[in-house]
Image 1 (tube, rainbow, N blue to C red):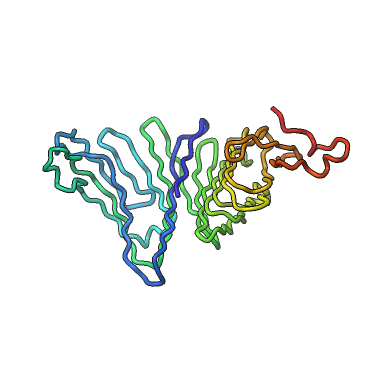
Image 2: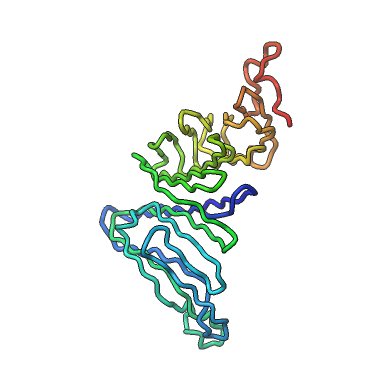
Length: 277
């Protein structure tokens, strides 16, 4: 599972989860991350990337000065073997004249039963300040916080579709939320039916698990469910599977549904007022 976080109020980055499933036995696993060429072989420029693996986040420094942080949330950083080595991706070593050259590849190793991989990948350069990273303690699932200058991002992964702990209770495979001034302004959920953070319910789905996201203005849904109640004082439109979905106001919440609320049979009522900009 990959979540691409991209908005105007913070730099873009990736959240990656890998739900490894093998059997009930312990096996040796390697997580490999291939970076760009090169060391001058195959006619490529000499721009070999270098890895720093001593602490979390892992960091790659590009031959042209770009950087990438790899913040490992799970497995526990101390349980991983960490190494980088030059590797050539060509099956025939470039003998055909179509060489990609040598690359500096990261390898994270662990012996475990079905390890769950969860990490954030943050690319940047000298003009961008990376966030501070923290692992959250959850009783079910895994969580991380990325603290930017003006916002805090929270990312969660629930291999069993359950995320519990650190003020969070939800039924979702993945969840992400951005808070500005202590209030959620953007969020995204995958395979979710409900999610509550710090006592505030962000999502309630009536029906099947759904993919739900918002940029704070519009709500986007991919599901066959009946209705979606979401926190979003500024949400004024919604779409489900590419089709417009009516939205009704209820204080700071929005009800997106093809079936008008029962209160709309009476005269007036906040929930009967369409959410319009």
